[in-house]
Amino acid sequence: MAAGSARVPVIAGNWKMHKTQAETREFFAAFLPLVAGAKHCEIVVAPPFTALAAAVEAARDSAVMIGAQDLYWEPQGAFTGEVSAGMLVESGCRAVIVGHSERREHFGETDDIVARKTRATLDAGLRPIVCVGETLREREEGKMEEVLERQFHGAFGALTAQAFSPILVAYEPVWAIGTGRTATPQLAAEAHGFLRSLAASRFGHEAAARLRILYGGSVKPANIRGLMAMEEIDGALVGGASLEAMSFAELVNYREG
Ligand code: PEP
Image (cartoon, rainbow, N blue to C red; front, side, top):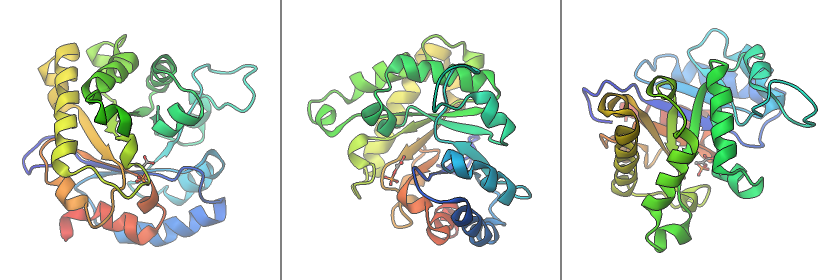
């Protein structure tokens, strides 16, 4: 992100189905001292549900925000296996990843489900990190903008500008997630610019200028600086490289290199 922009960068880690409670405590013991001086960005870590309490406890006296990787939109009821926004609030979570491409692909999440989950996250006072992004096939067929537009309006179409304002959008081209194949900073910035234009037409220019858009897809210490140098890129959502304290701290400390 260019110097002088008012948007505070966010570096967020998505642990997916990795780490026990003991491994979570071990991670934070190593990670927190490495990022204690990082004041330039917000830091989010999203462990699996079973390690949330351990993460909240371990990060208690730090600036690290703990997030969940998913939620269910109903407050309670006969929904075996699901976890509500209220339960996440009680466990000390402050953010939730919504609509990750793995949930869309493996668990059949539709744009309507993403919209419901986004609404439930907002209603609970949690910060949604809503993921959008095209598959390789869609990109090759020239459908990137069409897909992003459908996902953007599907998730946010029913919101007011005020309700939309806490949302972080993560642009995660599916072809770049866990593949080692990162979008170039230019490609990512182009997609971010398009998403910002969608936000401007739906919620107005001010809301669009404030919107923070994270890039996700094989972000590593070796490529973060190039990405973060782009005015349009306001942070990163990181899978693999967030699992190691050293590499995630290097990402958080991208300004020092
Ligand atoms: C992700 O899980 O959102 C992600 C971007 O994964 P990775 O960094 O491993 O590509």
